[in-house]
Length: 176
Image 1: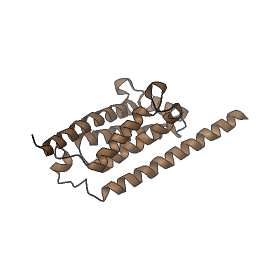
Image 2 (image 1 turned 90 degrees about the horizontal axis):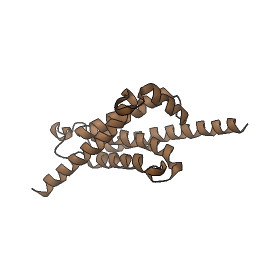
Image 3 (image 1 turned 45 degrees about the vertical axis):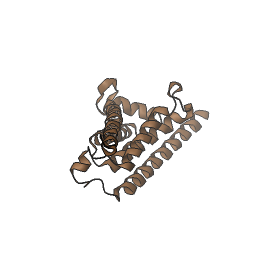
Image 4 (image 1 turned 180 degrees about the vertical axis):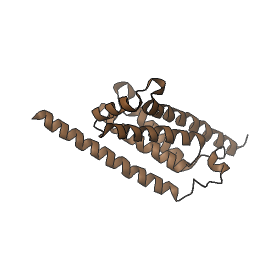
């Protein structure tokens, strides 16, 4: 087996694993699959975490995870898929960061690592065993990498800032 084949097989395995985990989490939010709360339950949870309005936040989060994860697994539109999943995980990290790093304490370890992995795949591309390769990289152009990541980072920053303001307002109301 050549080094290139090993590289591409490794990317395929990484994409399938990370994409499947992300897609599963997204389908919990969107459809209630795998013990998830579905749109309504997730929307209520998002409201409680400061993401307002809750239902559209649940849809956006679910689509970033399920859509980004599925596209990563397929190796299709890899820059956009990686950026979308990473942006969604950035918002999840904002919820977990007060609990520190490690997952057993409710920390950011899991969403942080998923977001990091998605971003890395989005940056490096899907490899030869992918739909991007099969379609001659029509949805994986060099210009798409910065466009996707700048857009995703800006959207995540707006959402995280809006959540912080909502939490601040709620804390101020509770103090009065």
